Length: 179
Image (cartoon, rainbow, N blue to C red; front, side, top):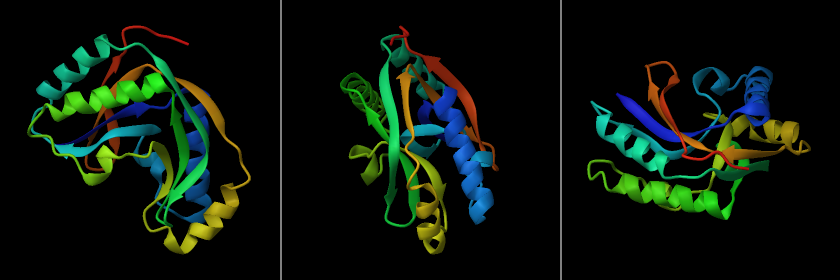
């Protein structure tokens, strides 16, 4: 089975994110992200495993030792003309948590990491897959919008692909809710 690890974006930020993905998909006939995956920030790119027991134990133990911090979704960015995203700014504490999570995950010797996972640009994708020819239209459509959402980074989730879409497999709340 195919899984990935991330933070689920909820509240007003999640609603905005999903509505924007839907509007872009319907307006420009692009890949329907809003139907395929919940609003999220990826920490560990998709990986295959037959069983998630080891990963779940690691995530649960990790989450029990974490205190919530803040992440801010603000503005837009893009990777060439292939991906458009909302920019994510993590507080110092949130970045420490993400870095610690990455180090813990690297302890799982069977889990492979790609080149972009070690030097990641935090983001949450709003348009992807074959948008090159529509990129300028989409960019002009969103460029004057100024999203700004401050969220509590208070959990990590393991998502599973069912062959059609990504679903929440399990989620682990941090020890303490903050801010």
